[in-house]
Amino acid sequence: MKPNQKSKSLLVALAIALLLLPFVTDALLGRGWVRIADFAMLYIMLALGLNIVVGYAGLLDLGYIAFFAVGAYCYALTGSPHLAIAFPALFPGGVHLSFWVVLPLSALVAGGFGVLLGAPTLRLRGDYLAIVTLGFGEIIRIFLNNLNAPLNLTNGPQGISRIDPISTAGVSLNATQEIFGIALPSVHLYFYLFLAFTALVIFISQRLEKSRIGRAWMAIREDEIAASAMGINTRNLKLLAFAMGAMFGGVSGTLFAGFQGFVSPESFSLMESIMVLCMVVLGGMGNIAGVILGGVLLALLPEILRHSVVPMQQALFGKTLVDPESLRMLLFGGALIVMMLYRPAGLWPSRVRRRELDTDEAAETV
Amino acid sequence: MNNPAALPLLQLSSIGKQFGGLSALSDVSLHIRRGEIYGLIGPNGAGKTTLFNVITGLYQASAGEFRFNGQRYQVCKPHVLAQAGIARTFQNIRLFANLTALENVMIGRHLRTRAGVFGALLRNRTTRNEEHAITERARELLHYVGISKPAQTLAKHLSYGEQRRLEIARALATEPLLLALDEPAAGMNATETENLKALLQTIRGSGITVLLIEHDVKLIMGLCDRIAVLDYGKKIAEGIPNEVRQNPAVIAAYLGGSDD
Image (tube, rainbow over all chains, first blue to last red; front, side, top):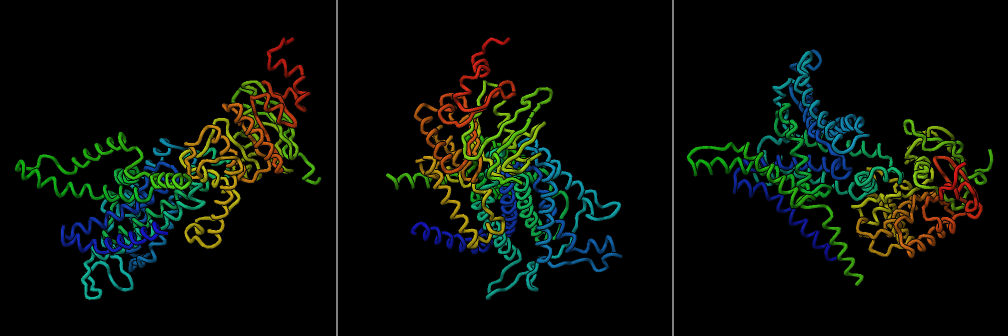
């Protein structure tokens, strides 16, 4: 009973810390960092979604950002004046669906795309699967880039702007709101919204991991032939993994579009897919806490660099010699190599807890 | 329609299997009766594992008819045959190495349980009861095959003999009618082989039919009710162990006797 109570009080402490985080960050580092924390949570959701595909089912997906894009464009199209401008006859006043209506729809659409893009890859494994999914990811991005003619569906490379901000029960998250006499700026409001969604995504991941479905995914990851000989329908379960992962990506993308107010294809490049994959791999494939850690680190790293490299160089040399963006790739590559050498299972690999349990059990029997 | 219980459990008629131009199996017919231990032997490359893979759905037969439990199967995936009641082990152990012994057996229960995504998310009473039953059954099976290490040990940390037994436990978890074992005694020492023999007899005693491929002729002769001998993809003999042992074709195949 005791460790249970301990973990419960730890959870409460963590929740309080997270609730206070935007205020502390705002006071210490400035409002820009609250916005960065908001983005970090979008990345965490993406990483947890990809973790289902890569970490649980063992399907190396290099085009995952496509589902983020699908979610983002779902809300961009239905929550902006774009369709009214492009097709005035069809949508005279624009669509302007509520965010809360679009959210489940875009999760479903993204899930559908997950199945659609997953289905042709079912016979592929490892490197081959990676190459095909990479291609699919790029296809989606190129479609978004070019679907401005003959029919202007996506507005091409200019992207879609003036997306409605997310609002709940008539309260817009894009303005400072006062609750119990505390002024909550927009970024704080989004922080709490994203926190709630991240918590939901963590909850779903956890429940799935410790279930019959999760075990079947891991069986496929470990040995597909043995899994199928044990009666697991590998086709259906792989498609389910693609769909679940894509749904998380779609939700994250919808939130992104509402938060940002603007989407364009360049947000969904291959580099972003690789970033999300790195979050999963660096953090610890298959382990939720590890994936979250990876997401936080990799979302913060470029921002820390951006804020420290230029002032540091200015102070040292009087001018900027190295662009923080190129330094980011250098450090990133270095970190990957170091990780591969010293911690190939990730910063926080999934079996640590189990091994602890093992020793506990062994200690009990002695 | 005959009473299915009276029919043989597995009936192969003129099974052939070709890989490109190579004929790995040709015109193999055999039947396995309910409740027996059936042995399949033959020199290296005789087609034993190929036949085995055809029976378990990993390969599709190029010719012939396949009947299991009164039902005819044509093009069939392994998971469909597992559902029908054929469970197998592998010649080169194929456990889920990074999962625990318990999880390995729990995965074997996948087939006979139902919880889906919603069950997993809601974790309602039905799902919890099912999970509980899965865990209990998996623990029982670990005990049944004689794995004494903690259930949370990773499969890859078990000893070789235990890994072989874990594969059997995982296969039993699918509630098979036919348990097909591909060289279960390979690499085992004499004691381990004796334990395996006892285990297989217990399994048969519980009403499960056993199909055994084995190199260890002593084990096969002592354990099996009937034996088929394959050579160059053809069945050259079938019968009770003593008959087969004295069959000149079998002696020739094994000792490379004079071909006329």
